[in-house]
Image (cartoon, rainbow, N blue to C red; front, side):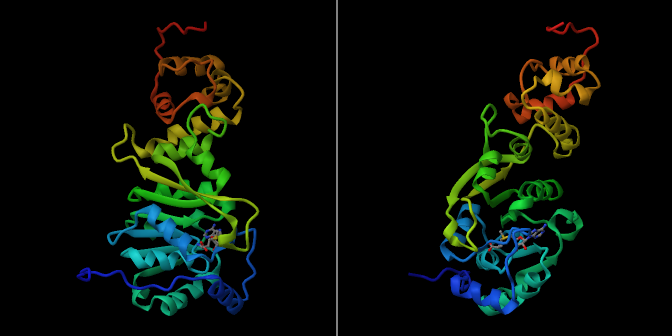
Amino acid sequence: MNAPDNPAPAVDLLGPAEIRQLADKLGVTPTKKLGQNFVHDPNTVRRIIGAADVGADDHVVEIGPGLGSLTLGLLEVAEKVTVVEIDERLAGELPRTVAWRAPQAAGRLHVIVQDALRLRPEQITGPTALVANLPYNVSVPVLLHFLAIFPSITRVLVMVQAEVADRLAAEPGSKTYGVPSVKAAFYGDVRRAGTIGRHVFWPEPNIESGLVRIDRHPDPDWDFTDRDAVFPLVDAAFAQRRKTLRAALSGHYGSAQAAEDALVAAGIDPKLRGERLAVEDFVRLAHSTPDPEQESYTR
Ligand code: SAM
């Protein structure tokens, strides 16, 4: 059998012994506050990277590289990996870990030491994919922040709490459908991509984790900058999720009547609850201009 032209560089992924060795060396006691549960299972890392379809053309951004379990796996396949880590000790050790386990990939790693929620678009040029085991306490806001500031990200594969994964991938009308579902669907097709047990982490979390894949809409009917008009409507619709849209959006539009007029103009029944609306409905509502002549059908 012929060897491939560009064989993937061999990378030694981190197992339980190396994770403990690194943590001991750094004196790291994982904190709950920063959601520090480190993956110590190479098979899980390979599963995540396979589910993300990362390839040699990708510039992957990883939020929260921690001790580097996933980073090493990403460096094995991607052209470039940029990581954003809030914990200075972990970020500082990462280049040494890569030099130890994957020296040939050291020049392809870029480390940013910062709170990912405060990252600005000019800090990373043209990332194509986001792959991360997200810190659980900021998982949804940080995911939405990166989708908003990097339109070049076309693929996302994140590990989050199983319950959050369910909410992100929920369909209109289901119990778990809510703000994260609509906002994620605004950017792309969202689906569950598997469940991960607790034993692959150190320390073990109390709950299962889930993988979520998002493929950015290649040609949506709306502009991604429309979020400034769409997202406040989504927040208002779900802030009082048991109310009808007419009531829930009355604050947003100034009165229940004005909310009703906007809903009717968008072809949406004002007596529905927000949980029935798909992202397309929210976009249509954000763009609707009530016709002053129109007879509202609940009047
Ligand atoms: N990627 C590693 C792995 O899979 O083993 C670690 C994942 S751990 C669940 C989450 C990581 O995110 C930790 O390294 C933590 O320090 C980091 N982190 C927490 N909050 C952060 C934030 N706001 N910005 C950037 N990194 C953060």
